[in-house]
Image 1 (cartoon, one colour):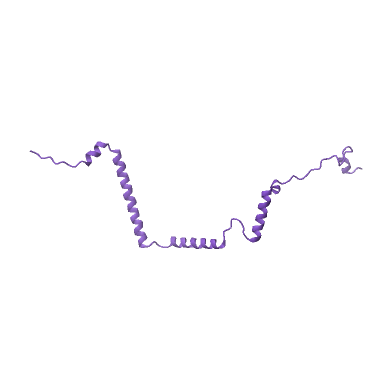
Image 2: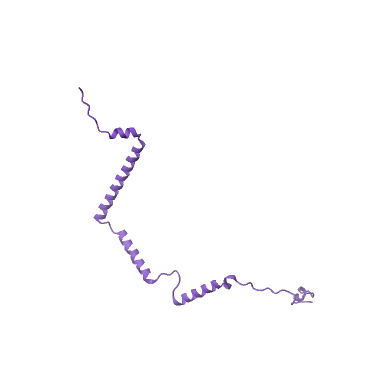
Length: 126
């Protein structure tokens, strides 16, 4: 009996005639920019300077600032703040009323506006 290997091989083909497949080059690894970036990342990693990582001092300061903002949000507003907020609301309401009044005056014909601005003239009966 013949072995399976002998059956599949044909006597016409020799091992030297076949084209041997080659591994294709990786364009990312062949790129000079990619190599330099990879070296820089390795260097920074060894030194502890990872990209997109904030310094420790900056992180601590941001945490303190966030903590202060949370405390201010939870604390009750002072009397001055309450009065200032009320005053601001009154001013906004007044400005809205003025805007509405000016818009309504613009819609009125001109002769009616002029008539309203004239002084009342007293008429004497003889």
